[in-house]
Image 1 (cartoon, rainbow, N blue to C red):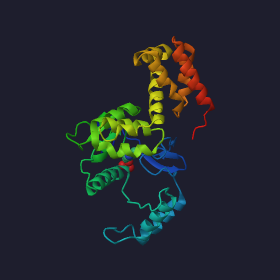
Image 2 (image 1 turned 90 degrees about the vertical axis):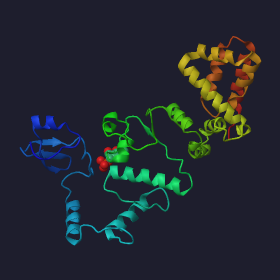
Image 3 (image 1 turned 60 degrees about the horizontal axis):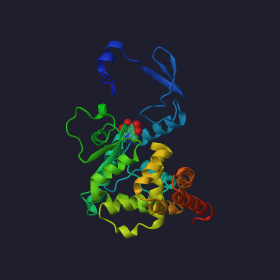
Length: 306
Ligand SMILES: Cc1ncc(COP(=O)(O)O)c(C=O)c1O
């Protein structure tokens, strides 16, 4: 056993089994000290995966190290490589006017990003906006902010209190994210308002704002209401099948009311509308409702949507 403390390791197991000392690399392969060759399938895990033995990288690093390894960029100090790299990144970035803040790695970058976001809201008079939603299983590094944001329990546990105002949601559930936003209440308003610019999400954002008392309910136009209804009925169809859908429609009210709801579905900008109307037209026990669905399906087929 050496005096080296291995990251992400059971130190006792390493001590019992010994270390695998990797000695050199070329392209996608590495060799251990005994001369055995391995394919590096982890592609330079934790480091830059540019391949091994790249002479041009070694030459550039050697030249720079000889000239000057680095110089602090505090205040107005700069050095040429840092300026060149920032220019190159700005030219590649999709956002005009991009500036780069360089860090020592991913964990450092995540900590810096969390600080920047919080600072932004403090400076713009919204210090209440501190909640960060993270996904279960997420990995964001091992510094303090990244540890606080980790969705991997083993990476978070055992450190006492970490960063406050972090809410974790299942990685694959938009509903859970919506529930987290509900809990955040008006603090989430700006995020939800930003969704008003996305046609498919607009009605959901409107409903959320109405529920929070942040928007006039009359602003929910008929197209948006129809899209919401189509998505809701669609998820009932997915979960409970055609019978479940018909049962749910039955609970909406007498046939005339059901016909009203379905009669508007042609306005919904989603392929779900045609599917739903087809099911209702075929299977609804009320001739009035089935007819309304057929009419709406016809309108859907013959209307050119914007
Ligand atoms: C999303 C994300 N954040 C942070 C990190 C941490 O990066 P580093 O190991 O350079 O600290 C990683 C590394 O895999 C990552 O994938």
